[in-house]
Image (tube, rainbow, N blue to C red; front, side):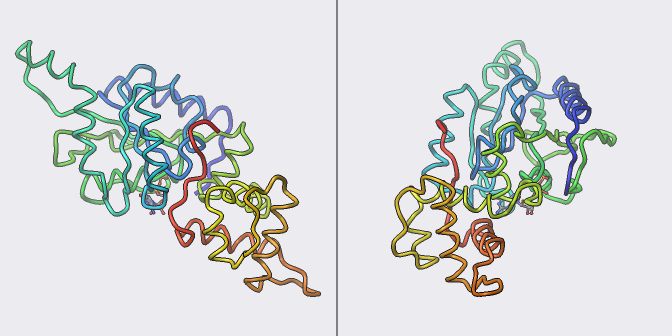
Length: 288
Ligand code: GDP
């Protein structure tokens, strides 16, 4: 899916979510657990405002569990609730209604004290493209309700989806634009497949990812690609390109004259990363 995010689209997407906020009790902010910062919308705090928020670290099956725990603590420290999930298999999804209720406990108790009848909580899923919104909606609904490939600025009739628990969901998720202004966020999003890699040079993406991975996940790279003398740090693009070349040579990604085809080598690395063949990897931590 490609979305061209022109300023007009961004304004419309923001306004649409603001309209829906009036209808709901809690926002389910869906992010990618492998790139929790880069996969957030840069204006999310402004858009969601003080509405209670449950941050859902999706694709946790592909992310480093220790790092996911650090990120969850980070989001709780910011005043949100946080939960790691895997929307495609359903892991963690059944805990969403309970977490949402925890966030709204004070409000629910006030209503009960006034003798009001408790009603199901109403929620809206928001997130950037490809983060798993449709997968999660279908999973919560227990059937196929969300068409993948929704576009911003296109509204259908709005419906509440019952989730079989005390939670109702708006059937159209809020689609938000990713971080464009930060080139490193772009590389991280391209590496996970959230943005099309044609926008960036795939070998640049691969070199950046090697630099990110070398210090923490060097052993994984050494083992998979037989890189016995991989340094602990790859301080510049040149040193990363040398590692990419070694990967290409190892994997037989050759162009004419025995030279390594860097694009092919980059393709090997990124496919391995996305499919989980390099193990569970998280590409950023809260302070970077
Ligand atoms: P949307 O654009 O936010 O609605 O994203 P989709 O629901 O279409 O999901 C994008 C891609 O991510 C699809 O290929 C999904 O199968 C995949 N996906 C969604 N959730 C998960 C998850 O928790 N784990 C993994 N491994 N893949 C997921």
